Length: 176
Image (cartoon, rainbow, N blue to C red; front, side, top):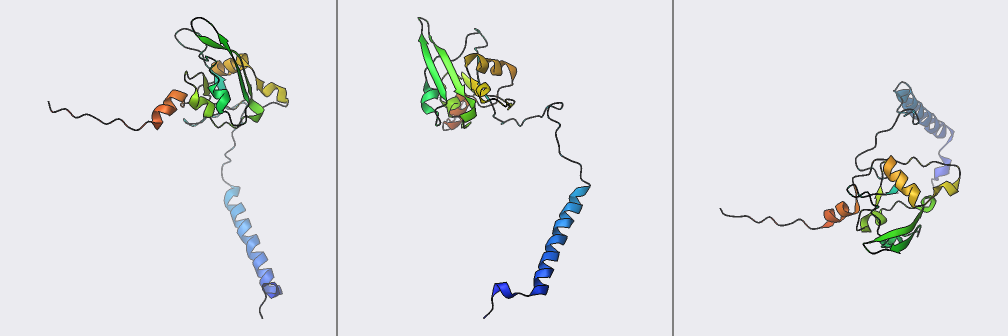
């Protein structure tokens, strides 16, 4: 009867020695490579085009009004329920009276961005919200607007994402 535990002293020693040689070979191969470290605070990292980080609220570039109409679709679709919106109804249009986002519990699933009919909530090309106090990650409407002004928006807005999900339009060929 052969048992795997009775390989013998020399077989175990050879297996251990070969593992050490393989590990040292990898270490030796990487010892003289240039490091890939980015010195973050002093050197700004470039993000890929499709990077999506922080959430922010936006303004309309033409009128200067906030885009959020307080429809609460983002609140309803949010899986961890970290978005709270209160609507302010006015004559011309609705606004978000309050908009709070608990960033410390956000899953960054982007569902809120996808359902927003006015592209009011977008993801930014940044992640710079490191803090030692959780209360600073409870973002209200003013903080979310400040993030939107400070960082570059990601390529993916709600309307753009919805347009990508539509089936391609058939081209009409004309015989002229």
